[in-house]
Length: 145
Ligand code: DQA
Image 1: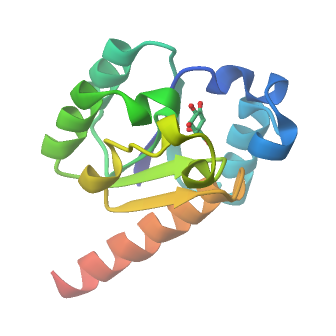
Image 2: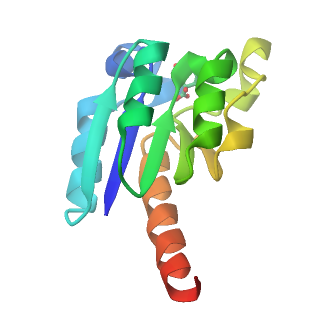
């Protein structure tokens, strides 16, 4: 099973940002935790600060599922939304923070309506929950499709 984990702008500096909001792990530590927790899954880890590059990475991916944290593009990017809409694979959106209970400008989410699941507010655990969801979902699909 191949899963893309794509993180957007400023997530490469997550350990420099507010710890009570984002938790204390760096992106590298989160990625290491994911690999250690699921040693049999082939994860492709990508991070970029650029909207178009995120779309290029999504368009080029050939695998079973995507986990995406679009960062601030969640609240602004119709281009990213449109790309995710036509990608016909399992898609999970993860946010470290509970962005729904923060500033008003974070209330708009262009991504949630084009993904299978949105997980927010569970810090790094959200990524592990996303992998669990994908594993279960793909197993059920295999059995009943
Ligand atoms: C974030 C939430 C966004 O509002 C913010 O712009 C981020 C990180 C999160 O993981 O909580 O950069 O996606």
